[in-house]
Image (tube, rainbow, N blue to C red; front, top):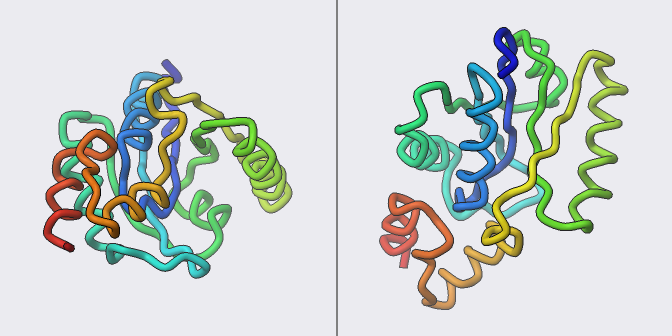
Length: 160
């Protein structure tokens, strides 16, 4: 474990999935503090408000004592400087994720040379999973309980 470093796992998390929770759990074993940082992505149509996503992640990660959930806006590089950390956690589900994530890691490092991005692979059972798929399944009345934490499943059901 990196004994002095906190790490940030950023994303829109709309909705939080079991894949997200898997990455959060894995990261929590590597760092003394993980800050799950929720943001509004202006190019995405969100199902849940920023506060709802923060609350859902707090509930889903409540058994992980070294995980904190927060929200931010603006550039991620600026946010990291503000909270005085430089380690980013990103999940890679498939090769298709790598190209985008690689570009983002390089851009973040260009914005702040101290930023390091650590890529974690989810459990095989979550490699196909995305928030977009979960939203579509929920919108069409499908069952999402195998794809999201229980608190998210309840919230998705309440939205119908």
